[in-house]
Image 1 (cartoon, rainbow, N blue to C red):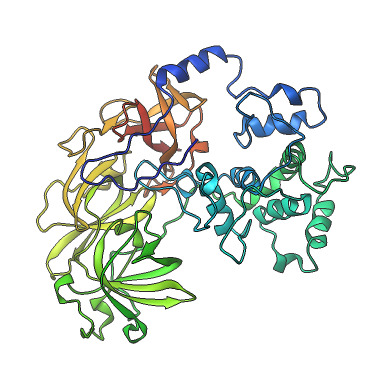
Image 2: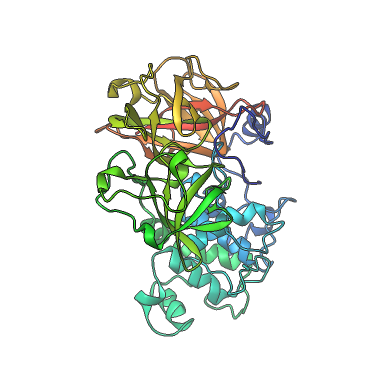
Length: 485
């Protein structure tokens, strides 16, 4: 399936995506009522690796080819290897396929034309240290993978590394695989390149250690941008850009790559930015911020570049994304905007990223009681230059053409009776599809003091959810799921 490639909805225009219709998914369920999982390809039945392939198919880690076969003797490519290993790691969907309002991550490699289906997985594999590109800026996604290389990728996904293992590659990784007894079922095979069945068997053997190494159920908070900073950015080392733009995925500014660990500061007003502007020496005059507020924003900025990547950016305090954004609220704070006016900051998870948006002065309708926003409600924020102009729940006066709660009206969670083949059935009899790239937020019953970004694998029989459709794609399917565990 192709990745979704839109961030926050801008100007009410949305790109239509082709998803399976609810009717088609219901038919699939009806035709496969004896199992909640996809069928095991016929050409692995009776083979020694049938158990491994079956288990990985049931977990959604591997699938058959378009003709329903697995082609077990086919040799694995680097792109396919990344998909198998990353799916075994079970990352949040937003980190791989994006969301309805956030684009799929881009890898930056120059040779992925035609590999859009794999780029999010490649990007995550590289980001996680599972795989690497080549010095010439390519990834060579169609190249065959040796067993040594695949073993290395799997063990790196299980939190082993060159540093922790020591020794010389590939013996350090293959010896560890032998020590962990991961070669069961394939250790008698003398093969240079990894076939699909070998990769399935080895991944199955290593699944427990991969899952333990990636056990974190929900994504922790990623930033705080509602308070001052103790640091003053060193602008003397920065270059000035009078009018640069952040790209759609917020991975580049003015055409230059932004570091994954970039520091974002806001200071002053856009009208005052110039090459020789004077900066305050008071840390309290700066706010630390997050890059996720600046999709497609054109703004002056001061940037520090190291190793050809932007590591620090200073931006005006009155710029930011314009359009509609959707998310859950974790709290509100009293703060001041770039003009020094007292305003409310709304702490959200938007497209699974932690962002504090400042509301316009005296904006009404902001929920300030945790009992009102920590109840599974998703809000639409209508923004101009990063400032909230209007805030509304699904049943309120929102601006979007589509913003509908699919699980039921009101503020009640509903219990999941079953979740199979991408379709939720509630105990109340409601059925709706969940998009592959749905944003998932989780509340824990024990404390229920904040939402965390979660994974679709948490949608199971017995949990309670609220589900929302925010996409104008003619499909009655959920873009956002809120889970109470």
